[in-house]
Length: 430
Ligand code: HEM
Image (cartoon, rainbow, N blue to C red; front, top):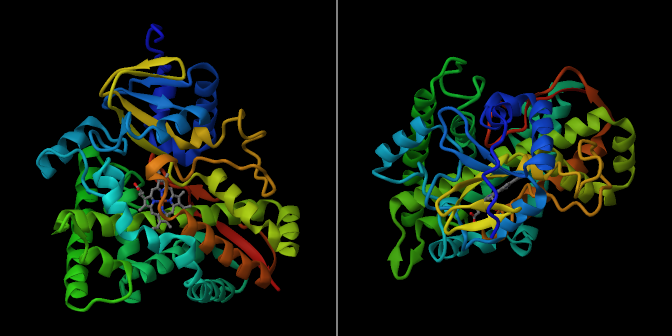
């Protein structure tokens, strides 16, 4: 085992990695990750107000950690980065758990697979094939709404924030009329750090205030889903809500907290992420008329467009793991209980795997991005995300002849779930 001293990242790089604004600004953080990949691929982040953690920045090391689920665990510490103050508050509120929401991503074996299996078949291609017609209907209605704007709109507000929401809510079984509430709560839960998305709509929030707002959003979610669960126990339907409400593991119904966490992860993970990569695809096409024309003319290029949009946008910007034992990653010694950040943004821009990584290239192949993670926690909704994006762009490319930016898009200020929060475009209907 190597005996090298810990590689400590320079303070300005550490400060950027924990700073939500850096992810909103985007180019700076990508340059800093590049430095880390080249000089200190497994580097210790010592940032004020945060527990020290290792930033894993190379694609290869992210894959190794993600796939070694016995050595790198999700349950012991938070799977999402947060300041110490937030962690203490979470412990207090939950009575000792590092996780505000108890869901698939915060579980380890053997419990994790028992829970994952409950809904897994719903999200497999075979089952999704039966939903294609319904999804296409939702996609058409979204494109209708975009065309109704007459040629100029904000693509995020008009299309991409709403379409994946509608799809996942249909699968979950949430009534259409409650979707605005689901959108608001998800944005408040994931966007606590962004002044445009948090509850207070304020720049001046302390970490404690951010947590308080996130907690309120989680409570509202739990309250909503507990009512939905009661309804589905009394009156079962053909939806994921019914599966969760009536789930039994080892002969026992699952607890209310676990059921609520399950609903929340499907509801929340299922749309903001897909919304961000859908907007990413549109952003790239609006900047590149040649690529737009090529894909409009040849729809066999659509899967490549979708995969590249997911890589280029990287909606989920990190997840954390905890080392279960002393080990070594990328030549660096890691001790038991150390906290590690899987820096997906960095892995998806690693020149060792993606030549000219900043360039959006729909024909990039192979495109082995890490945006969906890897190992046993690999995104449960990846087939759904790909399918809904492919259908939307298929419909959209039928209906518009060209598209361009009508202003400067903005990315959300968030260390966790990010991507475009505004995308002003002008388009010419076909
Ligand atoms: C482009 C869109 C999406 C991206 C980039 C994305 C990304 C991710 C990532 C990075 C993880 C963690 C993987 C790991 O730890 O190795 C994850 C987990 C998960 N995702 Fe997604 N996701 C997307 C769409 C969806 C959709 C549409 C759903 C709908 C159900 C969904 C549901 C989940 C669930 C339930 C998990 C937890 C899986 C587990 O821990 O076993 N995601 N996703």
